[in-house]
Every structure is written in C-alpha cells, then in structure tokens.
Length: 127
Image (cartoon, rainbow, N blue to C red; front, side, top):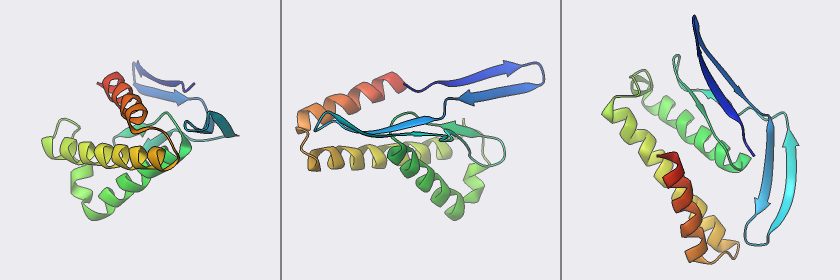
C-alpha cells in the first residue's frame, strides 16, 4: 500500500510518502521483491511535484518520460498545471505508459480482458 500525503500549511505545503516499493507479477500471482528507501515524490520543474503508486518500474517510466519532456520542451514545464498544452503532454505520457503496461502484462501471460479491467480501475480511481 502506498501512502502519499500533501498538507496545505500557513507558509506553504508539506509533502510526504512512504518509502517502500514492491515488484509483483499479476500473471503468476507472486511477489518478486520489496525495496525500502524509495523516493516517491519527485520535482517537475521549479514549482511542481509529482508522485506515484504501484511498481517502481512504472514510476521509473513516468520519471523518464517527464525528464525527456523537460529536456525537449522546458518551457512547457514552467507553465501552470491549468495550461491545456501541459495537460495534453501529461495525458500523452499517461496513455503511452498505460499502453506499455498492458502490453507487458499480456506478454507475461495475463489475459487481455483482465489487464484491461486493472487499467480501467486505476484510471477511474485517478479521476
């Protein structure tokens, strides 16, 4: 279970998370590893933070895509989250990683209809 907390305070905000990550195979129903000391809160430009839950591998994919976006289009990272261009870029990153995760789960033997259900639940929970 992931715990990510954001508190609005008088002089700013406080962000906190747990530091544990697990890698598991849905296809085989077995846990492959658990790590401690994982940082789940990351910077996006000078004035934004992002976090993730789920496997460390997916978090790393998101980080790599956001780093690539920053390298190729640093100006968009400086825009407010309400900016439609930034929202579109973040949506594209989410969709590409979701697609890659579906393909990975199918390659591991998970039936496609089960993977689609898992992704749908995650997407609905995030809205």
